[in-house]
Amino acid sequence: MRIALALFSGLTVTAAQAAEPADVLTTYADIALAGYEDSLVTARALDEKIEALVADPSAEALEAAKQAWLAARVPYQQTEAYRFGNPIVDDWEGRVNAWPLDEGLIDYVDAGYGTESDANSFYTVNVITNDKINVGGEEINASTITPAVIQSLHEAGGIESNVATGYHAIEFLLWGQDLNGTEAGAGERPYTDYDPANCTGGNCERRAQYLSAASQLLIADLEEMVANWEEGGKARTSLTEGDPQAGLTAMLTGLGSLSYGELAGERMKLGLLLNDPEEEHDCFSDNTHNSHYYDIVGIRNVYFGEYERVGGEKVEGASLAELVREKDSALADEVEAKLDATLAAAEALKARAEETEAYDQMIGEGNAEGNAVVQAVIDGLVGQTRSLERVIASLDLSGVTIEGSDSLDAPDAVFQ
Image (cartoon, rainbow, N blue to C red; front, side):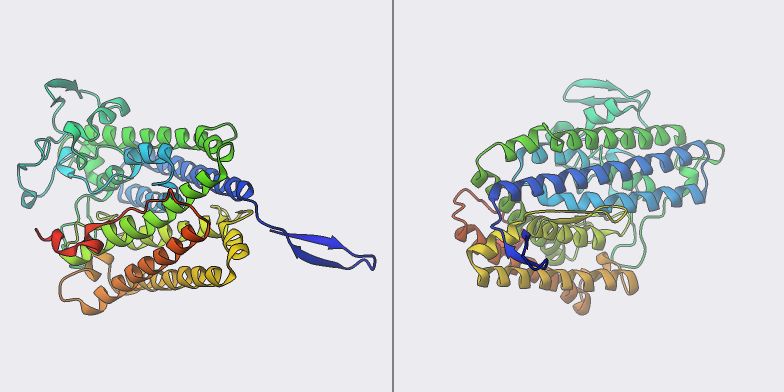
């Protein structure tokens, strides 16, 4: 931070005020609260469009719901920098953003999807078609699809790909499967899947129930997380009233793990190694370029202590960047250069997705130019992680553990 000092002449100059870890953690918590509040606001806007679609199905209503879903992803993805270091967020995150999902659990799928899986007995349960579901010997009454019903089916059988709730369940219900492989095109679910008078796909009323229930549950989950970051909330209190070094450890665990193991590894390098369009984060909507981009923006928000809210208001304060600069200005320059390089690579990927080809096409086999654009972002993320590791050492944060990924650390294992 900088403070103004008044001089006898009436002029002012600025003098550096040392950033205190406690102040840095307050900014960190403030940005978390703002990000989750924005996620909640945009989820409520999405719910309004979903209810309009259910009440009066049309192509226009479906498109409006899709656009609201895309808008809702912008603030939420920026909150992912709070994962890994904050147990409250980690324990909750799977309910709202788990992926990839076995969509046959939820609704009808193309014949190419298959009818069974050795790894998942719920692979084609199709809740929208079946009103009684057996989970672990217990029968679930799904005659009316409610938030409680789909919550009970989430990760059924202890299988992570049984994603019944959250953004990606809603995404699937709005777009349907993307059957284009690495060719152009996203999912193409017709609005008549929600129109009882002209029903395609069967069970239109139940599909509408599921979509509404998933939307309501997303709002409830986000309300819970907002409360955790408000004054007196568990997440904020554990940071601001605990050991500041532990708080900084949480921050850098989140930044390093999202940069390296999660984003560079599981979300990007794995799909690139396999040339597999199923290994993309927003696979039904072809929105993956934005998901990756806003994750990277979220990392920058935390490091620089700045967040631009939906609507343009700024949340800012004492930052990790200031703390690092006071400790080692050369290291600060290095980190900022690496973060800027990653952002530039992400901007190039985003522009290509919007102007030339979708992300799932970029990772396709034989697409040397597209592959290189994706790899440039991966390289940037790995590079910035190495600099963050030097920050961790500089600040003497011995408790930081950065998540890894076989796709980066042992790529041969991916093919075994």
